[in-house]
Image 1 (cartoon, helix red, strand yellow):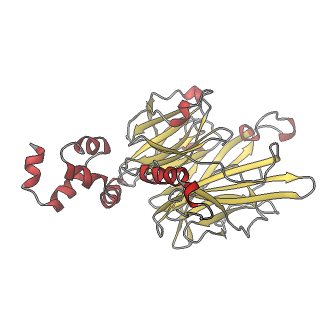
Image 2: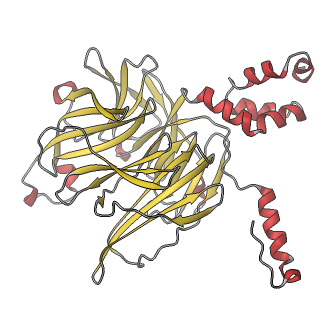
Image 3: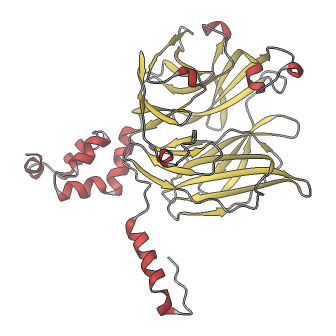
Length: 402
C-alpha cells in the first residue's frame, strides 16, 4: 500500500513527510522498497532528518553501570534502561557519559580505558582505539578529560583527549590529542595554554568548539576552548563573578539553545575543612547560583537561583534543558532530583521520577536527540583494508595509502 502510494507522490513530498518521523519508524520503512531504503540511508536525508529532530530531546542519565533515557515532561520523567556496548564487558564497569552530540553519546568505563561512540537510536557503536601517549602506567596526579563534538567544515565527529600528570624529573607533563571518526585515528595537537591546570570535568560542545574549565596559577577558574575546525586552543575569560574564596565555588557548563551556558554555584563550608574527612564537595552548602550565557562573544547574566527557592538544603545545581516555551528551565540538584525552575515566578516545581533510583545518585543528566547518524565503521573500508593486507606480498617494495 505504502509502496503503491509512493509512486503517486513527488519525491520531495515523500522526503518531507519521512523527515518528521521517529527513527524507529524510519528503520521499519526501509523495508517498503529499495528506493525508500536508499533515500532513508542517504547522508543527505540523515542530515535533513537531524535538523528536524534537534528540538525534540530526550534526557539521558548515567547511574552506576546503567544508562537510562526518558522523554522530557513537565510533570513526570519515566526512565527506561538503554542497552549500551559497555554492558558487554565482563566486569560491567560504571559507565560515564561524557557528551551527547547529534544523538551520538561518548561513553566510557570509569577509568576511561574503554571509550565508545554510541547512538542509542540506531544501536550503532564504535570502540575508539587508545590514544598514543607517553604517560606512565601509574602516573602521580593524573587528570584526564575528554571532549566530543562535530566539525562542520570536514563533516567529521571528533574526540579530544587532554591529560596531565606530575613527573619528579620533568615536573608537570601534559598531552593533547584528537581522534577523527572519519579517519579512525588519533593525532597529537599543540597546546599553547598548558600553563593552566585541568579540572576533572569533561568538555561541553557548542557548535564546532569544545569548552573546558581550567585553573590558572592564581587559582582563578577560566574557560579553555578547542576549535575542532582549526585544531587550536584559546582561553575565554569568565564573566564578572562575585568575590569568592577558592574552594567555595563550583562551575558547570552546558549547551542550551545552541549557546554556552555557565552555572556558578556559590557555597559555604558546613564544617571546618581541616576537620572534614572525605570528598570536599560534600562539605559545601548551597547559597545561590548565577546562570550566564555567552552570546556574540559577550557574557550575559540570565538569572539567579537562591537558596530559599529550593525546598531543601543542597550542594549544587546543574542545568539540563529549557522548556518548549523557554519560560522554565529543568535543573538537576545534587545529581539526585529534578525540578522545573519557573523564570517568571522564581519557583521550583519538583518533577516526579520513575525508573531511576535516587539512592544511586549522584547521576549526570544530558539531553539527546533521536538521529540516524551511524558511528559504525563502513564495511567496504574494512574489507578493502583486509584485501590489501592479504595481497601485500605481491607488491613488495610498495606502500599503499588509504
